[in-house]
Image 1 (cartoon, rainbow, N blue to C red):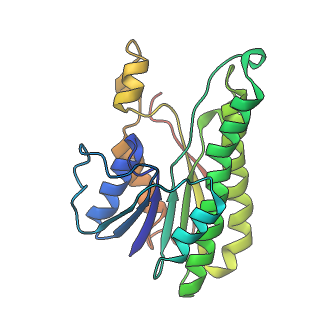
Image 2 (cartoon, rainbow, N blue to C red):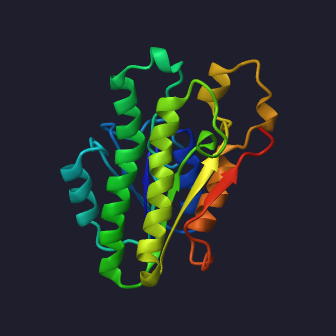
Length: 226
């Protein structure tokens, strides 16, 4: 099984890569970095194929990456960005960045994944990552929520478009994820109530697996107790 994971070097991405490796998958990582960060426990695994210096909001680069894959079963799109501020303090540049890093990266990944999966003729899976404010609006998150709403809309419309080809498309909708970065930014929060990256990775791995034969077009809440 060949799987693409965008954002694979992040807090959630590292756990998702680990979950797919545990299932015997070959994992392909398009990444902005020049090399895999040293702290990743699977960085020397022979089943990890990292391609450095790819801008995932660049149409030509994303297209070339997916076109070079010999075959593809699933594509997981985790790359994104976060911003929080009152709307009067939110610049157009911030809004456009949220749209680009959340929405455009998802669109390009989905489009090229569909093209790659179609070449096999065997169907496949796509999993995106939205965010809870899309389903439960929160203040001071207009730009971020708008960017993630693009992800939700792409997920549901694409699922309807490619269902007849046995390509199932879903999105997980996390609350605050228990990662070192989030703990550092919110030291007084109840970290035990947050879903862990490993827990979310298990949900993503199921949605991307052949065992998921029915679920498509869904926005799956993965809030934990947060």
